[in-house]
Image 1 (cartoon, rainbow, N blue to C red):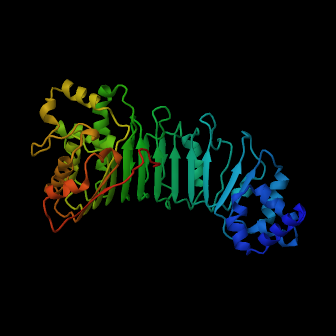
Image 2 (cartoon, helix red, strand yellow):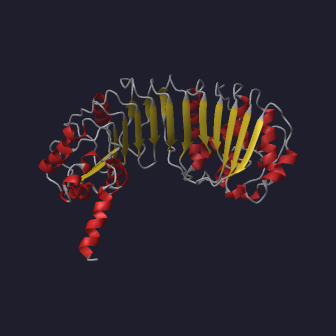
Length: 417
């Protein structure tokens, strides 16, 4: 059999596949330019590419006319992904028309690039989900973006510099807000978001104020790992996180990272009052150690409606324990006693020293400080596999009203917020 004949028979066998298989399982995984080139194979292939669920166009290698022609021939009723690549810093002709019907856009730039210069206009009347990463974003630019996205439901801002006030008052359909701030690219210092229901904030050790989050029902908060000058910032951080908590009192689902809990522990040891919460489901992403116990204990005591607690015990890049100890020593506290729980129990200093008795003590602490809890889940990563889960069970107090689930799993040290 000749080579040409083998190729022809192979193409014929592929050609006999249904359009759906060709489009969703073959053509959508190769560059769009290559997908389009299959139209020359035969009459059978002429229009197959027109309905692929994903399309990717490199504006740097295509003319505006060729992009227009491609999109005019593209007839898919539902597009899962539309990737428009360019390195140009100047305006691109027809780009508004190309993306006007898109429902989700992810934009990542270099920090020196400004998203939507002031002289530009925005009209994305179908956009529901927008993600902006690593860009210069002024208050006026964001206001222009929001005004041009009337049905926006989900907004993500990762390391967007220059933004000072995030005012979402006019975005009445916006329900989910995700923000990642960094000390070198601080992002918004004031958040006005009266309509959002879900907030995820990874905050730098810089000021961030919740001006209005009145509709919030779910929140996930943590603080970036930046130990430099911690003793000078510790008081400020405690004030900031407690002010944040005051705005979360009516949320039913809360999740806190380890650094956030560590700051709460400092506040609890110093006797700073905590607000009361209506939370029903609480998740704590933290390692089990003496440094989180005071903050954890106070959270439980101030959450009388709590029904489910999840502790995801793992080892993060957290505020170094020596900084916490040094701060409390400067405040005049005795390190041998201040980290103990209210019942006087002493705890391990880090996860490598965790034993089965510490996990049992954690369960006991939770049961003693909750009233309506019906389920507790503890997930341990590989750092805690020095003891067996079976060794913990005999130590647990029997409580028929609370379902306690202990498990070991490989938890990612870093997760995308």
